Length: 168
Image (cartoon, rainbow, N blue to C red; front, side):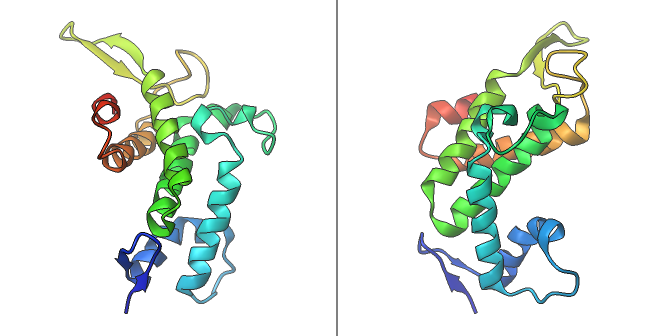
């Protein structure tokens, strides 16, 4: 069985379940049944909430939903929010969600800090946003990996935008 979503793509209930599983970890009641329609509603509700956070700014402190906290500018939280928005956009056909995620990726690319490698070639890295000891914080590969995964998802989502894809 499959679910026909707004973009006309058929998605199986299992795929929908996997897409929303991370949200369930945060919000589900232990032992609750995994209903595809309920998962889709949960993902849409989460995306609606995330849209109020100014994810595209890569600094949730600008948001009226979140108070000042040191992790508001962390690339792993904001990257995971962007990933959730991309998944929700893919499943619902809501282009606004994809646009917000792509703007976050645009912001991430601009925040790359230049560095010289051991081979004396130009490279770049992202600080994770905490603690602030370097440009935007220290390097943590796990946290940076979450952000770079979002960047890869944005690269795929920006298929018709060659200039944007090149930046990613």
